[in-house]
Length: 439
Ligand SMILES: Cc1cc2nc3c(=O)[nH]c(=O)nc-3n(C[C@H](O)[C@H](O)[C@H](O)COP(=O)(O)O)c2cc1C
Image 1: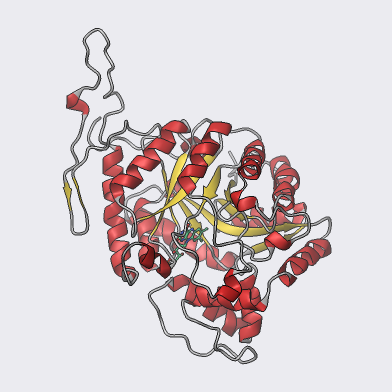
Image 2: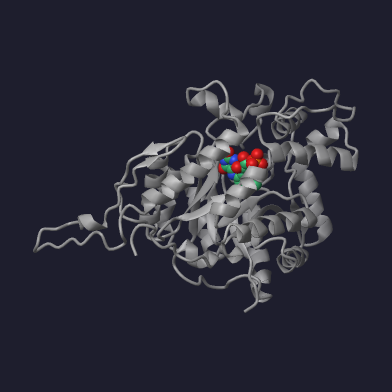
C-alpha cells in the first residue's frame, strides 16, 4: 500500500497570520464565534482531516500595545471547553489540544484528556509543550520562566506520570455487577505512588482508562531536548522546518533517535506546519498572499520579530542589518531560524519584520495541483508524514483547502477518501498502548 498524507488543522488561533482578520470576506470574530468554529470542524471532518488542533499560550503574547491592538492571534477559547463542545457535534475528526508541562499539574492534565477521550469516543490528542511564551510565568505566580533544560526535565517526568495515571485502571476494571453489587474490581486498580525529582503524585486517576488506552501524544519543540523528548514519547510531532532539506534532516534525526530508544519509527508521524494559499494560477495565489501581507502594520511586524527572537527588536535601526542577538531563555529554535534567515537573505530589520509580521514559516502558495506536487515530494522524500495546515484567512482559505486541494490529493491516492476507523489512533495508524500495570 502506498504511503498517504496525514492532515491536521491548526485552529488556535484560526489563522496565525496577523493580517488574516482584515482580508476581504474573512470572519473577523472567528476565534470567539462557536457557530463558525463548528462549521470549520464539520468541513474539516467532511474532508477527512485527521485532527482539529487547538494550540494554547496561557498569556496574551508579550507585545506592546501598538501591536496588541492590531492582532487577532493572541486571544481565543480555552482548548478543552471548545473541544468538548466540538466533540458533541462531530463523529470522527481527532481533537488535539496543547497542555503545558510547566504550568499545569499531571493529575489535571491526565483527567482532562481522559475525559475528552471518553466524551469523543477515542479522538483526543495531547500536544506536550513546555510553553514558549515566557510571560505565562507571571500568570502563574512566578517572575521567570523555568530554565529551558529544567522545563524539559520536568516535561519528561510529567509524561511518565500522566501516562501512568491513564493506566490506573485495567480496561475491564469496571465490572458494574448489579446483582453482586460490585462496581469496580479493586485488583484492577493501580496506585501509581510516583515520587520523582519534580513531581509527587499518588493516584489512581479518578476516571476509567481512556478509549484509546492513551490519548495520542504529540510534541512540538525542536531544540535538542525537544527532539529527544519527541523520540522517547511522541506519536506525532508538530514542527516548523523552513524548507524540505531542513525537514529531511529533522525527520531522519527524530526517527533515528526513536530507533536508539527502541521504538518503531512508524509509530510517530512528523507533521510540519504549512501555510497554504491557493489560487486558480500561481500568480493569483502569490497576489493573494501579497495582499494579505500588505494588511500587516509595521508595529505588528516588529513585535512578531521580537517574539520570534526572544529579544526586543523595537529599538533596532529598521534599515540596518540585524545586530548580534544574545541567547535567551525563550524558544531556542525560533531565534536560530530568524538569525539564519537574516543572514542567508541579507535582510534588514524592516524586511525581516515584514516577513515575521505575516507568517514566516513554510508556505505552499500555488494551485491545488502545484501544492499537491510539493506535498507529494515531501512525503516521497521522507521529509514529512503529513502536514499541520495553517490557513491564511477563513472561511475562504479553509474552503480552498477542503474543497479544492483535498480532492486533488484524493484523486492521486495521497489522502484518504474515507476514515479508516473511528479513533484518532486509527486515523494515524498508531497502535493502542498496552496498560503497563495490567495485561
Ligand atoms: C505547529 C506548532 C504548534 C505549537 N503549539 C504550541 C502551543 O500550543 N503552545 C506553546 O506554548 N508552544 C507551541 N509551539 C511551540 C513549541 O512548543 C516550542 O515551544 C517551540 O518550538 C520552542 O521549543 P524549543 O525551544 O524546544 O525549540 C508550537 C510549535 C509548532 C511548530
